[in-house]
Image 1 (spheres, rainbow, N blue to C red):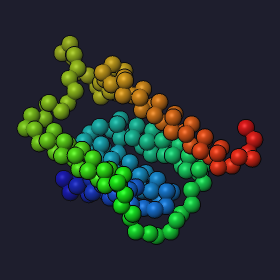
Image 2: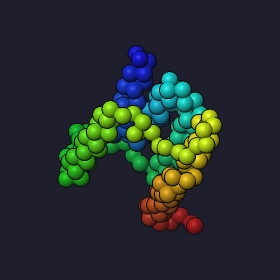
Image 3: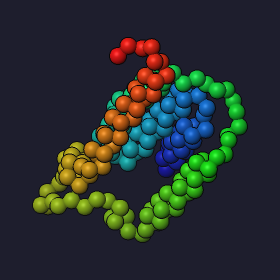
Image 4: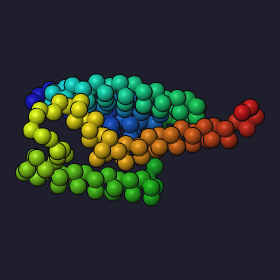
Length: 171
């Protein structure tokens, strides 16, 4: 249990680093640390496949994509400054607390089986990889495709922004 809480704390600290670090590269590296901490939590939950996918897909491929976009935008470090509160940031904090409240309500249920997606099985043992594949391409297909489109739009947006910033560049 001590290791679980340690890795959970490291994951939360990494996520807070993403929010509060001013340098975008430092924020991205903090996100990588959070991904690795989550992978360790998955290993402790005996979900080794999910942990490996977490490291390969998120800490590997997705973070390379993020770093590519950050370098394409060539963001500069503005140096240390105080957090400037605007309407958007206050709204983001309110929404974050709302999400935390909903998560606390869901996790506060006494029936842990209600949190696990149910699949139709014919009584045989289903391994985790088959279960993940079945759920991903049936019940969760729409969110899976929506995330892929969101990432594609984000990269296209970064290219468009970089193109406007350097108008003399050839296409």
